[in-house]
Length: 249
Image (cartoon, rainbow, N blue to C red; front, top):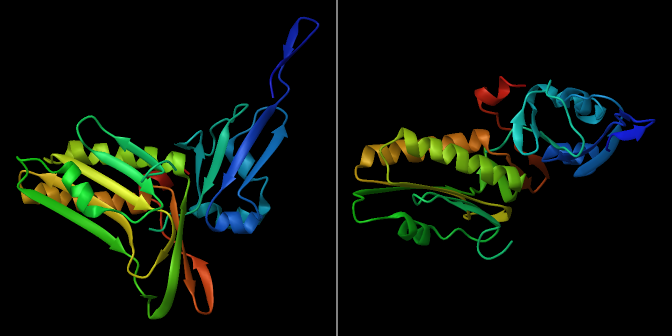
């Protein structure tokens, strides 16, 4: 909604906000998005208060405004896209979204099987004496409860941006040549790769350290959610946000 002119005076007619829901929140409010108009100034916390069905999860939810993690007290403006993000659980062509850094780092989301060998060939150079690859595989049980398959969903436009941000931070912090973070979305069967982290470096220790930090931060920072299906039901897997994000909420 835009300000309106009346008798040569501008009046604030309010804001129109788009709200996105993910993971179990989508099930609880029975929709994936909502749009509403509100009069006067509004904070993210006040927007959240419009949805009592998810109020009980407030302590574990973080907020995003226009694809950036945001504090609950932040003001909402007309046309904003707001997302409520439960704890993370751990297109065109091959990737639905991708960011290729000029230095060779690569970050992507895909709904197809991840081609790990092709990614290694993309990153590796002659000066690299080490290539460390982590592959997250869908296992057949959770604490002994047989798993049938998994579904992964995410806030894609924000997720790829966050993946690139943390990936470049890791690359600057370790003596590596290149880093790749790739996550698969959609339905996955037992034995499928859900995520791949690859680090190349002249020496092995920085490569190991960067790959470990990559998967740890991806699982706690990137807005991706996992739903696990069993013979007797299904459940959204509860994870935990990184402490730096929880501190903002």
